[in-house]
Image (cartoon, rainbow, N blue to C red; front, side, top):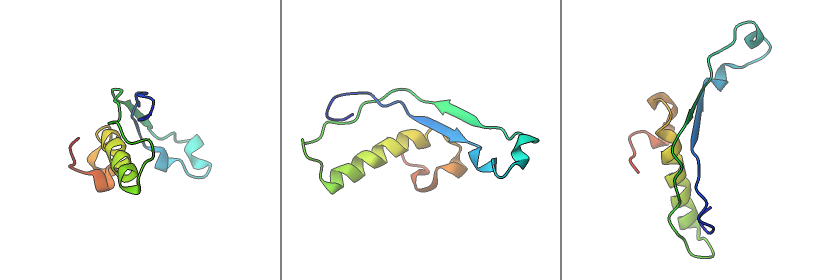
Length: 81
């Protein structure tokens, strides 16, 4: 996506952890899907370093975390763009 300028569409999904065994068929849990706004990654060199890859991963995860309730954000709680 970074090399070709293709936008990323972030999606946050919650409630899937409640689907266990077959009991969920009788009591269907609420699954929530939040779709964010497309965004582009910052440009990077032609060959990614480990540091650049980590930075891009964190950048993407911050966008996904914004779509989730605080209790689902984990390490990305309270981080801005």
